Length: 419
Image (cartoon, rainbow, N blue to C red):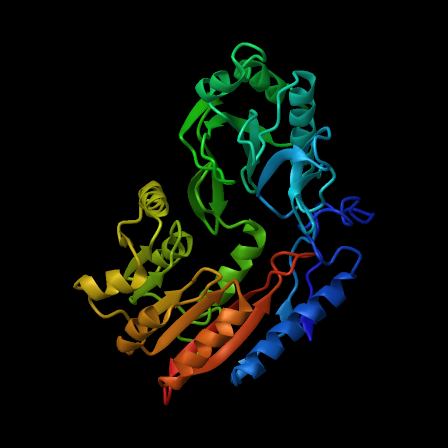
């Protein structure tokens, strides 16, 4: 069974023209109810495989918007065929070296497609060479676009080889990247959203990844603002933030309604007065949402930059009952003298929670653990571990926050056996 929400603000009436080449989506051409059925079946299979039988399993919930829901894209410069014309977009399905220009992508706001096409044309007109992953020569590496869905703000970040490294290879044969002309081009585009910052990131690493050696603000600011469930968030070009803001708002609301509710979400329950651990907290989004009612929230995240952002945003929102630790979850819980929480919330990466961290979480003996998952495979495995050590999966619900892709989110509530 499925719950489907039909509130698309932007709807594409045709199949994606990139579907046969781009590796970003696997369900293009599949009716949305069928996509939900496939994903629900995947979750059900993994739960049964791991002998997980929740007291209540709600139907998978469809995405509020099936199109234009992604608020961040990282595009790559390259070519579709060896030594062919420059492209800008996503990796070709099954081909590491080939890049498909995706200027009609349906997962992003049309402004993204306009910026991508204009950027590619700008670079082709100036004969800027694409960066070659094997020879480590060239100039143009990536284009990163981020959007504040509830604020209408855009951040555009062009990633290139540094001028120094470029001159060492090409001398004066080809002009270095003209950042001012690029800025003028971007600011002159007819867009629905407002560009609040144009950045240039210098990246000379040999790895096929965006590793910022330096970031220059060409115009505007180095961040955009987003609003989520009554809170404000400052998001920089390289900060982690939820990719589908509309969908995650719904997921978080339902997840927090589980705490103290037994086995069914209830709108009238509250975490008021409770002490909460938020483990794998990222930039502390759900930590701060909980802090609006909880007595105290402690967030733990291994990425230091994310913790810095969490602290900054907590201050921005005037929240004084949040603390954030940077470090591996197991090591922080093992080494810090922390008061036992009333509730533990976990939102781990796709790899799930490792055994040492699981053991430490279980050792607190809290009555309730709320698990927010982005990977049903590791969710089922972790739930089996919790159940072996005395917890029961009281409630589970999958969410489709990323239509046309393979990704599935879920929320689960665990209670100590007998509670």
